[in-house]
Image 1 (cartoon, one colour):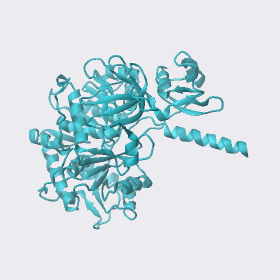
Image 2: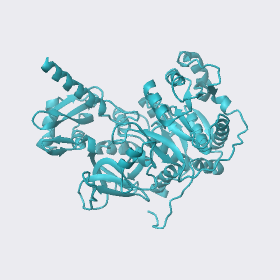
Image 3: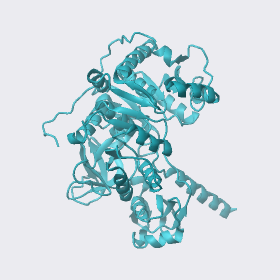
Image 4: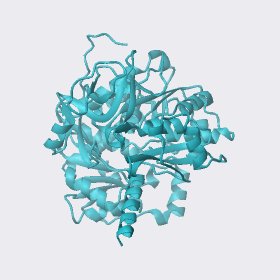
Length: 555
């Protein structure tokens, strides 16, 4: 794929945008609900926002929070902050006040950028009184809508707009960019200077800021760019569909930074709404569509009943969760695209491996290492290297995309590295062709009577049943075996199956030790902010039920 002598390009993140603006100033850069901006216009806004942030006191190393859904504001402020040496701290706008405050306190954010909506602004404003936060840059939702939509929003959605005080602690975005864009030059050392603090639970569940340097992010962007065969792009301007939230590391790199690297048009949506997405694909004709399995599953099911033309889509990378084989096959048949599964984590910027876009993409595999990346398998107990084929071990990553460490957590940083390689907390194995296969999270492994049971294996088996739309397996207490698997299932719309029928189906799919003690069918299963099926809520429910049962037994 590349010559062994290739050197990792080291550059600041904002250089990605500079190149697109220089070579394609008239190309469309962002389409937000019908309002479009060219690369020249985005570049100008970035310079003026950068100067505005400097006037607010942002210096090299200043942490600035982005509490924004997918909007042009995110793109502009992200590159503006990085241009002047600031550090972007990504916030989930759906966080409650307590979660926002914890991240503000931990990161030392002094300026936050937020929309003027009641769903977001009041939570951020409440933190002004009790944290290091000093100012809020407020962004008008109506100002980034096409003229007719803007008018309708201002009239019909007035109740959703927050009242913003007119004081020195609040800076409207319009005022932030009301300057000549003459940015005071700042020297950014890509290899050393932080670009983003990306908060993640890591392997312990305690939120920590992964320190991603400029070099980490631009290297991962270049790795992905080189992963795409030249013949699969360059047929005109690419169009990148941005449904995944940009505040999540997957979308930040694979949608925004990669999109800007190829001077693609970023078609942004503030949230995933199935009908809206299907109509938009048919109308806007995106060519690239990064997503998570639940999004592709939802589209497959909607198209089963008849739907829109999806034929414009050519390339898709799925991440965040295992991609079921039948979901991939169905989506490829609907669109004619290539859909491959990749793997990574916040600490690796995030992508470490991916299936080839040309050549063999093996079912259930997370693919091959990206350029300049080495994957090691190590014994979780003693850290010894595992060299054999099909032998299971903890996946460890070496590469230019691996983080500098956790923000102000030297002990956690030391614990997550082994001989300089990043420990992922995931168990996997390598086949004879070098393809990697993910078995499960170390923390999710169920210990049944001395045997390791991997939930993913049971989940993959459940997906083979024609009635199953989604499946999650967790470990529950068992008086005989210590732990036992329990499956939670959502059925396809219009399909029928009972727990006993699903257990009977599994008898030919999994071993006796892997057989779930119980199967529970639900209308909905909990998901994370990017649509990944989440286990922690189900684990908490089971723990609470166990404690309650124990209390009632004592009483």
